[in-house]
Length: 368
Ligand code: NAD
Image 1 (cartoon, rainbow, N blue to C red):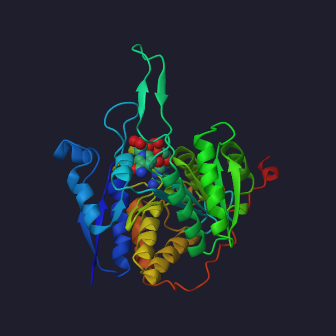
Image 2 (image 1 turned 90 degrees about the vertical axis):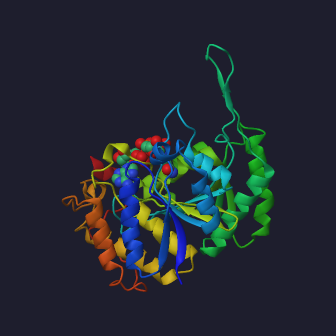
Image 3 (image 1 turned 60 degrees about the vertical axis):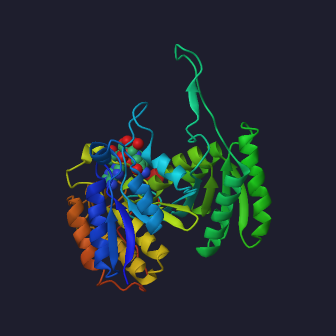
């Protein structure tokens, strides 16, 4: 039997990192029949629209997709394809795990948390306008509904149970946003008692940012609204080693789209330089979603061992910084080949060991 999965290569570094991810997926031996469709800049050239109906049809039919990043012009031009995709397929929960891998590229090698972000409404609803003709004032409407809040908060508690995590933190700004913030807060406070086995607490967004850079190991699952979740998931990606290694997934009812946290990084497009790990870890999540747990474990172990060995890693993992052993940088395709080579060789049940010379916990006193 083979799984049919929609594949959107995307823009910028997207085609390179999705090719890398595909190579690693193939190395697992799980039969995947990729249904390749174009969205973004390539689709504009071929179809006159960045999100052709065929892309949505393919995902609706297959119920599962692997996606590369898609460029969104700032301030003008077409609306974000990423936002439109989430809204049209009702992909309401954006899940972004932030786990430090092999202690590499991070000041916080113990980081292991998941940001669950509401992805269909809030300040990304697309309801905005100029207030006056001279464009000296503008408004963006922050739409928060009880229905969308309830389902994303329930999703976060269910994820916590499924992943054996015992702590969920809601993040909001209910002290200032007395309607939208309070609505999300109330939804959380009324959902939490249904999960008595899980510790539930709340933080204001500003305080959460400070807490995360001081002691990320005290948090496990964070659930929040769209804009706060967008910002926090980049922050958490930074805690765990950077955008190059941060995977993500979008879930709706019986539908899932896997995509990295990072964007299309246009300055690296076509240079075979980008880190493929984030997109490869999307394949790991995708395989887990399909029920292919051993294949998923193999991918994770192969990524871990490649990063721990530090022989074939891309520029962002080779830089001197929070690691004690800077090395020459390899290309995106070379790192993908190395991970794919390891996939059938690793022991997926072996403990994941952090090398002795990996980054150590950040100590500001050591930084002069
Ligand atoms: P970006 O994530 O594309 O890049 C920011 C910087 O992070 C890069 O310049 C690079 O230094 C680094 N980086 C990102 N991915 C990397 C990788 N795989 N390997 C190594 N380094 C990497 O963010 P941006 O520059 O703000 O956005 C570029 C475009 O991507 C924009 O049009 C934006 O709208 C879009 N975007 C799309 C998505 C998505 O498709 N889900 C997400 C974020 C941004």
